[in-house]
Image 1 (cartoon, one colour):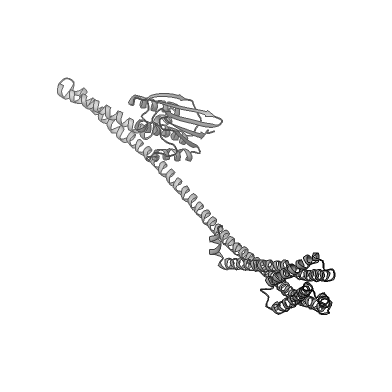
Image 2: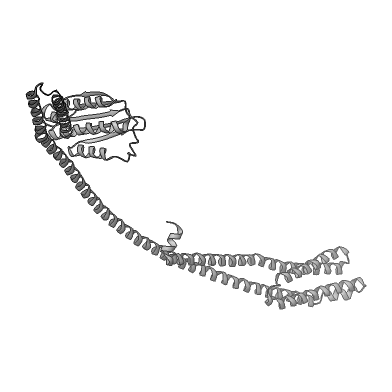
Length: 447
């Protein structure tokens, strides 16, 4: 089942699935961004603390270097002083960059800058007095308590900045917890929506499957009904065909009897009358004698033709001589009237009168078709008994045909097949283009 069919069958399920996917993406992306921002802020908060610590260390270093220089007068103490001053200024610059986006830190940062600059200016003024030769005034200035007050103010203002930073961290932490809680609730809700969508999808599939099974059951019932109707119609058609075949054989028998009894008697009577007339005339009228002789010959030909027609309609030899002599006569006459060479291997078999007639008609129809369509030079006819079955085969070396695609005119083959199946046997046709045709018939041997 593809995605399009699912959307068409279950629009509600598809809408829920799409909503769940979009909401999951939104919650995931929001949680990710908030978490990244909080973690980045946590990382940079250490930079603010380090800058405050560096500021205090720089001021302490500057104050220590200044006092050492004032007390000893050695220039070597000016180097740590200068380094401390530079470190304090750099720390102020770092703090300004760090707190640029925090309006609440603007005032404490300005106060811290003012205090640090005032303290650094006081340290520089004391050194300037010392360099001017006013050492006592410089020492007095350095030992004043105002320096301690400035350092206390720096610490207090740094602590205020740290409090602002801690408040910002607490706010971001609260926001992160809220986002995580929302994400948790959202995931739970989306999971519930997903389970609902899955339930609806499975339910829809169950409904579709039930409908499919119902349709399959209906189709099976209809197919069974159609198969039964086809079997009934086939049986009816088979019975009708057998009835028509039987009726045709009965009609042939009736015609053969009528021709034999009535036409034969008339022709024989006419022949006898002509013979008597010829005997009475003698040589008195030679011309009339010739006419009578010609009439007798015509009557003999008519009697022979009648006998041939009677044999075609219902072979009397089949009842008088048996199946093998009748088939030999049929094949001999076929070979005489055609250019086909016949090879016969016929053995005595046990068949009922109806089955014998079926075999005779089969061979007769096969030889007729062979002379019309096969263009064969030779034909092989065999009949034998094997394992309780009478097997009859008619094979030729003609043009043949594709057995999977029978020729258009197949009524002869269909008639043969119906005859054989009516007698309880089966017929097989084996043929291929250019390889001739073989009819194989198997009939149950009679007791």
